[in-house]
Image (cartoon, rainbow, N blue to C red; front, side):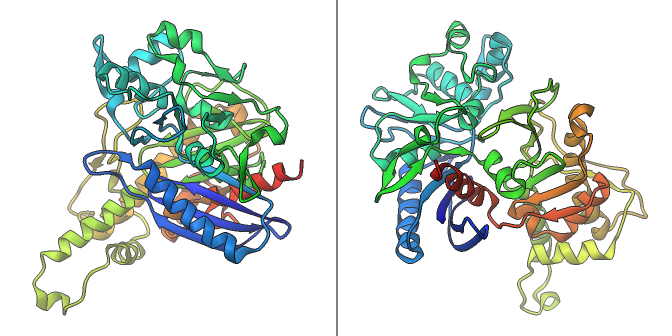
Length: 439
């Protein structure tokens, strides 16, 4: 049986063709995703057009397909009209309108305190609330939905969105026990609740997870990319720590129990159980900034020093890392801040005459990236971390960076393995489509 997985990520749109029996990707497609100028919004119809074009090519060359699964970047929303067509940009998880001031607080802080549900800027509920305060909710908008479910709607000609529990929970104001939005609580806080999509509870039959069919192939409502990535990398393993480094980064643990967790989030997992997640705004983009920083330095050198060669910042960073195995210089490269902690950014500490070298800086920078991930892992309750014996790494930000993997392995004190499938989120969506297509 073959299935297709589509991952609508922040920086790329990826499709994979999966041989379910062999658990092997036999073909794939990828296109860059872009922000619109002036912010962290994206064009939903451009995303759909690119995905449909790649899907058509994959279907032409891939033979018979049993199902199409979709993985979606989480938290963000767009508005659709009565016909199910987009009437707004897609406000991604990085959009900061939730920082708007309301009653002396940010919209995110106000909703968190008013409802008791932790919410951050970029969460769909917070974005919706802020846009309503700005009077920027489209007048012809009927519902809001995530970008993956918008793709499902367009593929299947559906006018009303639905949301899998994994996506619904990412918007904020979601009751894990009832597997439903706490609409009464949200309405009391002043949120306009008529825009929320219907929620698919995890116990419903697989057929209910279908949005419809595309060229006769079942298409399933999207799942959150964090859960899809974990499923693609580790299935439902309870002895693994999954570290994902993409645009942002996450440390995730799967457990069938629902345990109290002071820090981070408890997210529903497809089928059963929960994913315990510590998420960071920093990830592959942070390392990209390091590479660009090194290129900027080299760009100021005289031409005779460069011999006409263009310096690749990634290659230079790797060479510098190999020159220095350890350093007492400390770098915390939180270039994009710390979620829930305003105005807390990166720092460089303990600079001395002995460690003031490029190789020390790069080594400390990468060690700081690994330290942030390990600190997030330390935020999980002890009862959840017991029995974890290995790290499964996923995401291109870690797959392409051997020395970051080494630093993570050293700081966690566990062996690290790359997941067996590239493009874990798309592969996870394809695997789930394979499960659901059997019923």
